Image 1 (cartoon, chains in turn red, green):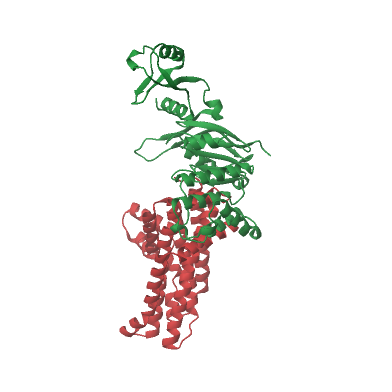
Image 2: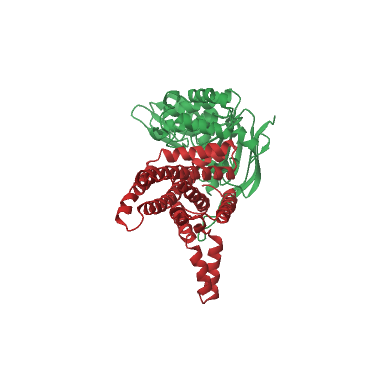
Length: 255
Length: 307
């Protein structure tokens, strides 16, 4: 456990000392702050528009950070061979991966906390409204990012850094089109095409499950069953994907 | 307490680079044993399988077959890993960390007691001569400094067995001497040392025993004096006052300098040449036996491997 914690802490420290992270975080904060501007330019409830765009920016930049940091921090560790010194010590390969995963999740979480604080402050300042449901939306985004980070780790183990990032990005895009894919399987004529799309549908998590933006922005009741189901599916995906990553990494020769 | 600290038996490894590339058989039944307390040199040309063997010992790669035991434990076990201090061929370190932070990280991975960690880090930094530069980011370190920190991380867990892959490569003469001194100090403290190297004088100066590895197998193991034949194969003779064309004894090679003539003659022809020089009125300036050295022996093995 101590080794996992040390690897996670080192991953977090590396990210904190990397200027690229600040670039992303800076953009995210600017984006959230400029939601006020979008609110002024768009017809509709200004506060709702601010929340809507703010939550979308939170999700987008968290995804970018997860994808980029997985490439920088996980693949780089293998590519630059700093992993040699870790694996020569009493550290199991799955412990290394779990440590990197927790480090990556911590980076995304720290970024989410910052963006949420900025968004809540913006909403409070401009509409005088204290909205704790924004915290709930951030927590669900965190669950989504936890799933995405697990895929990032899997792809970092399976393939080259750039390709791994693109594949993680693909999971994000396809994961948000999951329900459309399901509709496609019913409407396409060819059995083979339908079969392929069905396989993709089952392999890629439905990331829309974690999206409660509409409920939060429009003050709608939160369906607790959906929250429970999203949490269980996140846990299941993270467990299975990290297990697969460990399985592959366990037998991998490092050069 | 095992007397054999490292036992590698019949290690085989073939790499499969890709679909359209031929397989590369790197290790072909490599076996060796390193005894407790000795400095063991692992010599061989590039591509002989030295680094592959070391990577297999440290579980960076997996051999296709064969067994490795470290301090009496299966090499992948945590007990074996705790026993090993490993320094890779190039110092792969985190540029964002300072030297001290890196050693702290390594100490955490090894599960060192937190209370004893800082004194241990300071001691190791002192041993490798990095105490004064330990709080600088490693991204600003020179090659020599990185090599020292890399050695420090290998020493941090007080290992019973130090596995060093080319520890002196790329270092200047002062750096080499320092690393050599550190290795000797560790050996003096009872640590078993297994290191690969290309630098023959270092191996001759440090090693109790040497293994010569060529083409994935160990060709010879023993102390340098056991491996290198003691008999004199030829003599180098320098003389004056006689022209070379007046000598009929067969020579291996020769060189006429402005002040003297230098020749190399086979051992069996030495007496004949000396007699001839005496009869011709030559003045003998020097006579030196030429013994085969480790370098000659290695080249012989390498040539055998290549053929």
